[in-house]
Figure 1 (cartoon, rainbow, N blue to C red):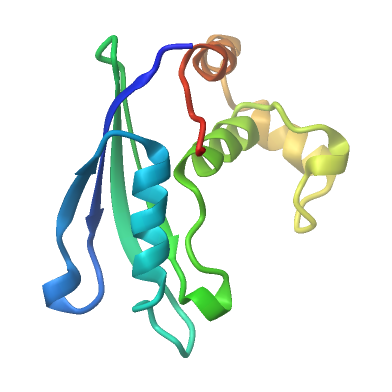
Figure 2 (figure 1 turned 60 degrees about the vertical axis):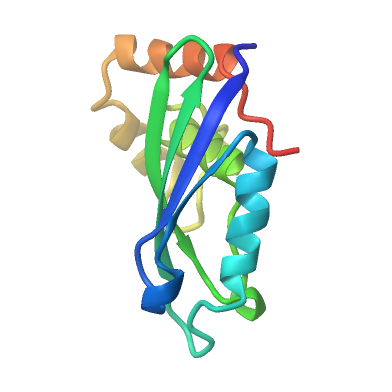
Length: 135
């Protein structure tokens, strides 16, 4: 597995003084900071957006966005879990039993059929190559 070089997270919503960018050496440290941010997310519902960028030791990068809810409403999803789940869902790696309740397995297969075989293979290779360990 190619190890992570750095992770950057930018809080894009919330109190102005808390909308900062931080850099971390591990996903665990970034996830800990996101969990802290969940304490100041909207208590009545909704979320604060956080953008993230991951760079691995070989120069590969990945960027995305997390919606951080208040700790009492679910808190912050772990970055590595989020990336794995997103790639698995979008590139056809879910078993029928894993398909979200709002979709039938047939609907999911139709959705995934719009992806190229090369993109699906690339996503599988990415997951097999790059460290996304949250701990």
